[in-house]
Length: 441
Image 1 (cartoon, one colour):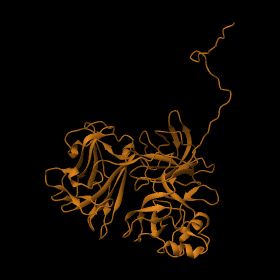
Image 2: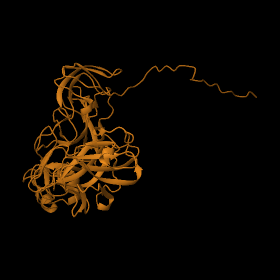
Image 3: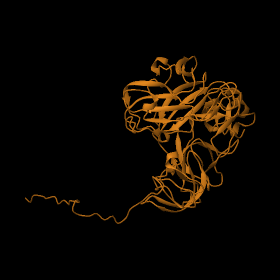
Image 4: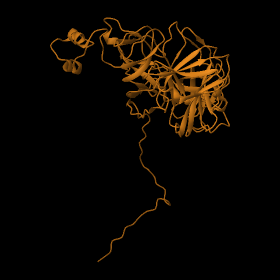
């Protein structure tokens, strides 16, 4: 009997040649599963004032506030002396890993009719145990900027890109694998001024006003359209691509969560320069693009060539200086081929800014075009233009509040029976909502 033998080949010593291969250039159109992690750190719910400590200089004090945007309470920070650097901070018993986070956000409300200047208040992060004075912060940022409160203060939302924090060397690492605390520093705030804060959250996908809590899909951009976080987007009825949403748009698509082609500059771009080096050139190509940084932009420019090896992008002459210190970036605009795409949230709860007072339970319609979306209260006859339904009331212009995005129209101020009865009195609720097109009564 012949014993069988098995012949093997060691590919360690033999090259492999593929005769045919398939490369999918842009595989992510349509529904796009994404990991949307969002976590409130211990004490970040601002329910218990004892979780927070303050410098013993008597300048910047923390107390409990009897109302909160989320839950029962929030923290109230009050300036009780002349402007001076003073800290209020949240101490953690054990460090936590926040290296996964892309954004940090929180609700805030100032003092009635008070004007705040940029850099009045800093948010900071510690990456080393020990002294929690502001000077020892590993990272810090101005999360609020200039703000003028209306006569009766309203709730706002601050969303900060983790990459926008300034890194202080010598106070722990610049990484966030071990975070020991966060805090707020009064850097220029005046005597008796206050700031109320609630629900401090770290998350991976932002909408400009908080975490994305819903389905995100990806689709190509319409020609020459630039989209950034928070923009209202609509389907272009002639191309099937994504355009800026118009006021009271029947084709509303969702809220932009990001332009995947956006990448930061690797080196400063000087006025008049015709090339820049970027961090990731893989999604850039010849065509129209936008450039900007925290001081200016977005401004349109033209990309004529992309070298993915050196990450050097040949562009039309820059009209201004764009620096990495100000987080300079480039992002593609839409093109004729439909190869430039955008990510957007199509349903779920999202924070939006009101352009007027909006009652609880009413529908909202878009109030802006081609920028961060603001909303109005829908009026009679606008059911088909409603983009969502309010979860809480908005007391006035400038207030940020949660809205349930939906493609289904809602009545304004009518109960379900009234709405259903206006379109088809012969069907029950399930049949109507499941089958009928209520934009065509």
